[in-house]
Image 1 (cartoon, one colour):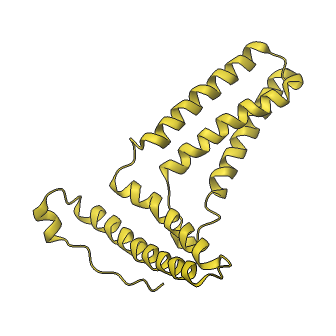
Image 2 (cartoon, rainbow, N blue to C red; image 1 turned 90 degrees about the horizontal axis):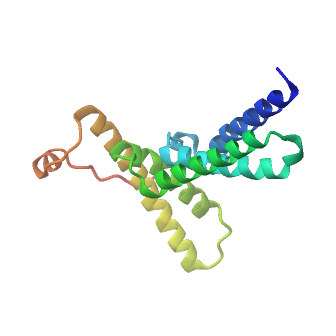
Image 3 (cartoon, rainbow, N blue to C red; image 1 turned 45 degrees about the vertical axis):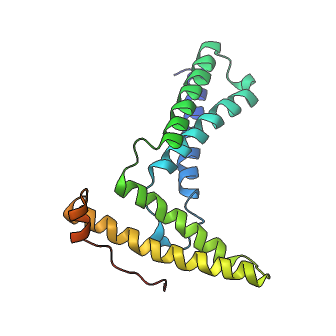
Length: 174
């Protein structure tokens, strides 16, 4: 293996490693570990960021990577991945019932973390934040219940099925 091939291999490994790290880092602002769920949208965002990072890093390290054809291929590949990931993020075409809720649980968890730990002095804002905390906790419980119910019984796609399996009332308590 020549030196140039090794450099491009290291470049690919660097981008791949950074993408895995970025994906994991997106969950660090979840309120609690039990709120971490697989999210297609976060995967798409990771690919979007990885594609941008590949193009930016290659531009900054142009002198280290002197195979013009490979560089152009990296830029074109990065653009294709970026556009595809952006489409998937914006359209949500692959996100369905349960995957939607699995993605929303960590999102709600972020709202709890921010609302609970922010240094809020205005009593009106504190009241708003407390309302957000209560709503998000209740909705996380509801989403967990719905995920389990859909997995066990299938989707309720008719009014009769919906009425036969009503969503219970959940408290806002942790």
